[in-house]
Amino acid sequence: MDDSALVGRAPATDAAAALLGRLAELGVAHIVVSPGSRSQALALVAAELESRGDVRVHVRIDERVAGFTALGIGRESGMPAAVVCTSGTAVANLLPAALEAHHAGVPLLLLTADRPPELRGVGANQTTRQPGMFAPNMRLEEDLPVPDALDVDGTGEQSMMLRRVAEDAVAAALGTGTRQAGPVHLNLPLREPLAGALPPWLGATELDLPAPALGPDVAGDELSTTEPSGALYQGGGGIGEANHPADPELDPHVLVRGPRTVVIAGADAGPAAEALAHAGGWPLIAEIVSGARFGRNLVHGYRGLLRDPELGGRIERAVVFGHPTLTREVTALLSRAEVEVLAVRGPGEPLNLNGVSASVDAVVAAVGDMDRDWFGAWMRASRGAAVDLAPPAPNAAALSSAVPAERLGAIASELAVARARIDRVGLVDAVWRATWPHDRLFFASSRLVRVADGVLGGKKVPVHANRGLAGIDGTIATGMGIAIASQTGGDVGVTRVLTGDLAFLYDVGALLLPVGETAPRLQVVVGNDGGGTIFDGLEVAEIAGPDAMQRVLYTPQDVDLAPLAAAYGWEYVRVATRAELDQALTARVVGRQIIEVALAR
Image (cartoon, rainbow, N blue to C red; front, side):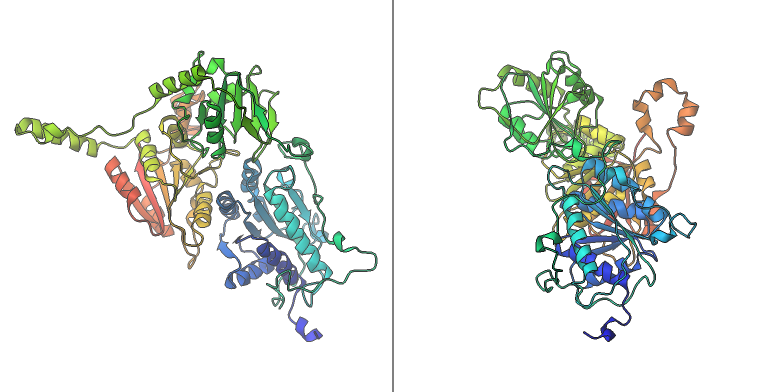
C-alpha cells in the first residue's frame, strides 16, 4: 500500500479502531458514548461499528447516566458494556457506577480519553490525573501509551498491543481465575489530530488479519499473557488477590447434617440458593432482590422469625448466597460469632461480618435425613407470618339478593374497595403481580424495597437492584440499561423500575434520550410521598425534632411530574386507586412511561 492510503488518517483513530474493533469481536455489544472533543476518535469508530451492525451505540450527555446505563446492560447481559467519555470531570462522573460495579461484581469497561502525559500537572485545560482515579475498585487499570503510528493493514505493533489490551480488559471485567467480575479502566491519552479517516482494516476479524511479523527474539506465545496486567489493588474496600484463594476449590463444600441451618439469599443470589434449601430441607430466607424468592422452603415474615429466640435464636449455621443488605435482623445473625457462616463466593466482596465466616466456592447438602422438627417449626411460623394481600372476595349472595338494602350495601362495599386510595403495600403488590418471567423488575434503594421485602410472597421473576452500595443514584439509568439489554433481538417483556420520588428526581437526567434513538419498553413507577419518609423508620426519628427532620432529612418536594415527563417525551399516567394502577400496569407498553402513584406520608 502506498503512502497515499495514509492521507487524512490519524493515530488516534487507528488506535480507537484497533481497540474497539477487538472489543466488538470479543462480544462487547453495547457502547455508551458521552460526547466530547478528546474522545471523538473513539466515538466516531463506535458510530461506524454500529452502522455495520457490530455494536449498538447509546448516547448520553451526562457521564453519570452513561455509567449507570452501562451498568444496567452488564447486570442483565452478563457482558460488559463500554463507556466512552472525554477528559476531566467527565471521568470523575463515572465513579458512582464504577463503585457499584465493583461492590456488586458487575462487568463494566471505562474508556476515558485523556490529554497526553506532558500536559498533566502543568495547568493545562480540562486536564487532571486520571490514572488511578478509580484505583481501589478496578479489576484492571491501564494508562495506555499515546498512539503515534499509522497502521497500514491492522497488524502494526500499536494495533496488536491494543488488541491484546482489549482481550485483557474483557477477561478482567468478566472475572479471571479466582477474581470476580467488575469494572476495568483503560485511560487513553491522545494528541492532536484527535480524529482522522477510518482505517480500511476496521472490522477485519482476527482470522482475516495476517500474522504479525515477529522479531528474531520474540516467540509467538509472547503476544499475549495470562498474567493480570495493570495495577492490582487491595484493601480500602478493593478486591485484590488476597481476598481470594490461590486456586478455586475443585470439589464443593459438603454441608453435613446436624447443625440447625438456614439458607440466606441476598441481592443477586439467584436460584442456586433455593436449590440448596430444597435439597437440604432447610428454611430459605430470601430477600426480595435475591432472585431466589420462590419455592416451598421460602420463609415469610422472616424478620420477626429471626427475632424469635426459638427460631432465629437457635440457628447454628447459615449458608449465604449473594449480598444481604435489606434487614438488620439478617445482619445481626451473620454478625454472631457462635453461628457458623458459610458464604458462597459470588460477585463483590467476600462476606465476613462476624470475623470468622468461611468463604466457599460451592456447597452441596450431604446425603441424609432432613431435620423435620427444625424445618417444620419454621414452616409453621412462616404460614402464620404470611401476609394475605388478596382483595376480599365479593359477597356474591348479597350482590344477587332480591332485598334492595342487601344488594345496595354489597355494591357500596365493592365501590369502596375500588375507590380506596392505594398505599405502599398495595403499590408493591400490584407491581409484583403484574411482573412475569419475560419481564424485568428493578427495585430502587428506597423505602418501597423494604416494604416489598416485608410483605410479598414467592414468585420466580428476574429481579435487579443496585445493592452493592445501595445508593439512590443511577436508578432510572440502570433500569434503562436493563431494558436495553433484555429487549435486544426483539425479546418480549417490559422492564419496570419501582422507585420513590427522591430516587427518581436524583436521576432525572436519565430521562433524556437523543432524538432518533430507539426507546425500550420501560415503566418507571414512582411512589410519591413528597420526600424521604424512609427516615421515619430509622433511629434519627426518635431523637430529632419535627422541624429538623423536615429541614435536613425528609427533603420535602412538590415537583409536578407531569410536565417533567412531557418535557423529556415520556408518557405519563397518574393513579390514585388500585384499580387505576392495575390498569396502567397491564396496558400495552410501547415505549417509555412514568406511572406516578400518590402516597400518604
